[in-house]
Image (cartoon, rainbow over all chains, first blue to last red):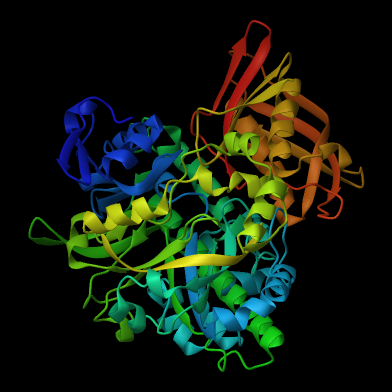
Length: 484
Length: 146
């Protein structure tokens, strides 16, 4: 329940004024319908108002419609900081740096895939490691891994794991600048260098989905993104930078705790919001290390795509390109990026933290692949394995939130509660009865991800559209799922 | 049960409260709670591999944080799930010296055929992270990112 004093600005926008906490520098803005707002746990408001106290914050501390409690920032939290006066905080990005979504088209339709579905999912499950302790197939030296963390998907292109088009259809072309592996600890490398090409666990998954004709919400944009035939099959997956990113965030969070208050005099209401001025040595070191994790995560998803292409080729006996396995887009939803935005009529350079929030550039903006320039940036919002996911596009009115929208459906039920309420085996059977074939490393993990543990994704997407954050293009329904 | 999971601190992650009559017991219990998120049957872990842990931190709570992180590190870096066999902590209340820990952990490489796996723990957060003395010993509150 939102705190007293939360004001309704319009149907899908709420504001907690600066007066809510004495040290808030800006108000909080929450994008949500009344029902979604009521479903948010109290920590969301506590965390979003804590973010509003951080130095250099510009505009508002935002929360997206899928917002739920996290640590430091809420999940769905977004905040832009002036690069000269503002901070950088690992708690505004998350431990899973560049956790993100990738969507891949095929030229196959459901009727062609259905007879092979079980084999396809079984082969994907066998070839793409998932779950606790999963190791990838790439055998890299630690030195090569460091190189990869600076080069991102350019490394994949050079080593035969990508085609040029994959890079062009990835945020930042799959390689963010200012990545410096000398700022990354040995421990982070040791945790991550054997994990390329792995999904992880929790809410990470790989899904075979179908674009049913009745779920095409914008025919023109769907066609622009490569979804152009009835019952077209697509592949969506969700994962991040694995132990590499987790360790980088841990290392720098601990380092920031030593300087946030003592050296820089920045009071924080939650130790998870430990930070450093963006321009400081500590802030820049973290930024450069964090960018390495962003690149590693792009590579992780690219190597998974490579495996997906191999599996489809094996199952259908054709070349991946003959199966139309073209990447639609790859978006990141846990980052801090330097961006140029116009705020109150002035062009400003800002460090935009998005934690469980997706960049959504409007049509015509720089940073969108040339072929999508008129359509707007593709946005991928992943839902639960029971309810489906969405492909959306950025819109001009997204300027209000520094061109940011939701990233998922958002949890409403704790993991423990979900495990008490659901059994993984029952869920697996229920999904199979509904025609969704699922393979999971962990029944406990499966139960935690039951559809009822999440908000209604249709409502979340409706709220993002009504608030003018992004435009729904296609709803994609699952038919096969691989879970960690 | 010397630890219990908390349902009201976090929606997306896992929180627990651990207790111990001694610091050594508290640290061991806090790791048991963390381990049980990743493996439902930690008793199935064979004593095949052994690792020594030596840490020194300016405060007790940072010592606990790094102790848990160190064991999470072995899970990713070497694919090992470990249980604590020996744990010794040196710390003087009110003293100016740092807190020190020496521990031996034993376990084995993760094997999905044998181990009933749960959810991967990414990190120990500082959100509501707390270590406090109470009448019967020590208590820690921990939120894990999963």
